[in-house]
Structures are given as structure tokens and as C-alpha cells.
Image 1 (cartoon, rainbow, N blue to C red):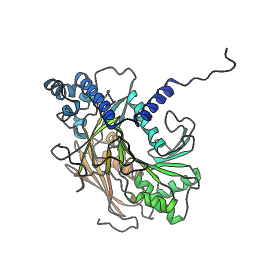
Image 2 (cartoon, rainbow, N blue to C red):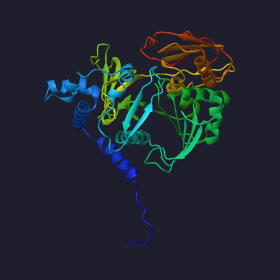
Image 3 (tube, one colour):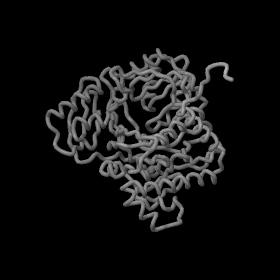
Image 4 (cartoon, helix red, strand yellow):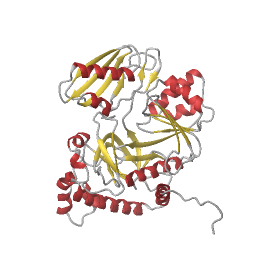
Length: 445
């Protein structure tokens, strides 16, 4: 007989706990066991996409039909590589016609490669992502009951939000977020007031915070670690964090279209590909695999999202694979990631801010296919646009107002309409690039 109130976990919490435990067990697999599971997941994904997704019915189904019995890994090599432009053009045809019993979530990417896309996820795939985020924090011994402060994208009028729980299985931990588009001095003031044990932000924003903190001689007293995400981490950042705040940096590599891709190894070198969730290929310009150690295009297949299967998606980044990690993990290793790096906008008074522009917000003003802002000096910014039609004077005025709300200061804003915005020599695309060093000088690097 019960002697008091009974508390049961919610279905969501129980599902999350099961996924988190599966990821714990997977860390004990041998490389052969991991490869077997990944191959089985890929086979089911290809079959489901070929049967229920119009684009894959045309392009993937013939591959499966013409080579019955072949390994899914071999078949995958014959499926066309998807680009962001292709996703934009084939949006409806890439969505599954099959009912998703757990529901779906739609969202648009930030467009940080210059070509925004809208993607659809089923909730089971989102649950897998929550499990991977929990793994990231667990690998670095972070206490989910402690306070986590985030300097990242925050919607809302005041740019600040508060809550509980870092992820579904961590309901106790306090969270406080501030929009990272605020000037860095304001961010630092807020961070010092919040005084969290952990900070989550973008690597370039973390670097700017550290440099400003060094200039002011200040440090959050309880901070134990910086968790970084969203862009390539500069090699200098861990040493900078150690020398200024005496804290380590824990990085992860992710993209909203495909989820969490790789987590920095806590004890070894490089990043571990989350192979239970994604399959990563590194390809040359002719879609052929590059040898270990050589840089190739990052092409990702998410193994769990059936609502809009992202199969062989060229994310726009470059990376190089490394040998098995000395930590003993069976997960594949990326030894170097040349992802999308955001520069910081330099304000006339020397303060800097992380420039954030929503492709969806810009697209609501005018039909923009690509955009790029370039700060050429303290008093000039060039706004490059690839438009689907001529932009009206009213639309241009609204775009200018939006830019000036994000990039604070007194400067000339010049619109330039172009047919294409090329990538840099390293193969990266930046939606914002500053040619002004943080000391105000023009950089020619």
C-alpha cells in the first residue's frame, strides 16, 4: 500500500533517459560493432527515403534497385550529393510523404554559409540530439545541476531569457542566456553579474570576451569551463582561455540541418564523429573520398531524421580525418575542422560585437538568395546581395534599418548587387567579414 504521493517520470524524461543510456553503452562497442549498427541504420534510412521521399524516389530508389544485396555504404556513394542550393530548389520534394507518428519540427537555418535552408525533423531525431548534447556535457564532467550561461542567439525584445534544464534530462540546472549580438562589453558585464559555472558561446565571441576581460582585468569568479559551438574554433582559443581565465574550452561541431556532428575529445586529439547519429564523408571536388590527413568537403548523412532525410548533404565546411584516438574510443576522428568562422564587427569606440543576421528575417523583407556584409573600415560597410529580382527603394531602406540595428555605430552602408558571392581561398563562406583589426587598423591578412 502506498504511504505517500507517488512521482513518476514523464514519458519525455523516460525516453531521454533510455537514449542517454544507449549512448553510454555504445561507448563500449568495438569498431566492428559500431560499423554494423551504422550500416544497419543507413540501410533502413535509404530504403525509407527511396519509398517515401519524392526526390529520393527519383535519385536513390534506382540505386537500390540496380544493386540489390550490396552494402548500404557502397550504395551511398552512388547517391547524388545534396547542396544547399539544391535543397532550396527542391524543398518540397525532399520532405517525406510518410506520416511521422511523433510529429515534426520545422526551422530555418541561420544562413551562415550564405544560402539559408528550411529543414524538417521528426521528434525522435530531436531526442537523439538531446542525448548527444548530454554526452558532450558528460564527457567534460559538467554538472547539469549547476548554472549555465549562454551568449548565443536569443529572440525577444530584451535579448535575455532564463529557465531550468540544459536538456530534457537535466531539469535542475539554472540557465541564463543573453543575445550574442550585444556589444562585447555589455556581454561581459552581464556575464560577471550572472557568475555561472559554465559558459556556452561561439568561439569568436569567446575570444572577444577574453580579450576584453584581459583589458579590464576581470573574471567570472565561479567559471569552470567554456563550452563552444557553432563555428570553427581558432587554435589559439584554449591557450587564451587558460592564460586569461584559467579555464578549459570544450568544443563541439554541429549544424542545425544535420545535428551534432562531432565532439572534441576530452583526453585525446581532435574531434570524435558521433557515428551512431551521423555518417561523415570527406570528399574532393569530384566527390571522391580524400585520404586520411587530407582536407576534403564535409558531406553528412543524418541516420535518424526520416521527416526530411539529409543524405549526403554538403554542409559547406572542410575537414581532415585523423587516425584512431589514443583515448581508445571506436568513434572516427576529425583532426582538423575548417568550418565557418565569424569575424567580429569593430565599433568606432574599439568595442566589438558578434554580428548576427537572420536569413529568414532578411528574406521577409526582400527575395534574397545570398548575402554578405564586409566591414572595410571603421566608417564603411559593404552589403553584398544576390537577389532573385530587382530590390525596391523601400525594401532597400528596410534592409538598411535592419543592418543598422545589428551593427551599431556611425558608418556608410553601401549596397552592391552581384550575381554570386564566391567562397574564400580556403573554401569557406562568411556572411560577415571584417577587414578591420580589433585595434582599429585595416587588416590585409
